[in-house]
Image (cartoon, rainbow, N blue to C red):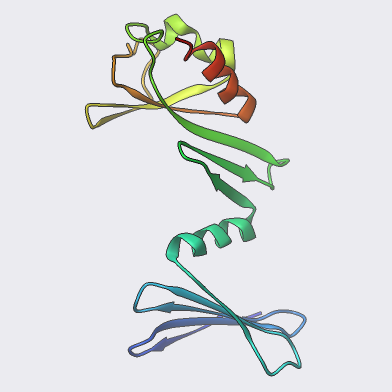
Length: 161
């Protein structure tokens, strides 16, 4: 299953390999930025093709490697099949009045919900891994990580008005 690559002047780069069963898979990274994938089954003359944007190609790569990402409006869920089907959710919350003026430690976020605040955006400035003494202010957006149940509990218990 050797991977072959070929620079195609004016077109882009082609990567191709043959599976153990004799099928051929070819990926073209075009100069226009799109990615084309062709598959040709063994003993077949007509290939199947799909054209993808770079985002769609990365999503396919994540699926093939087991790191599935499902995006929602303000959250992303990542599944790692190699880690006993671990699913992690990352969600953005705009802080409510119930949180303003309190620290992460005051709120006992991790102890109460299992979720962790991994970043806060304040006035277009990102604060990565805020300490327990971090005080939330009006207008802050908090990036929270945990299992889906942790995120729901965070929203229900911490972000209440």
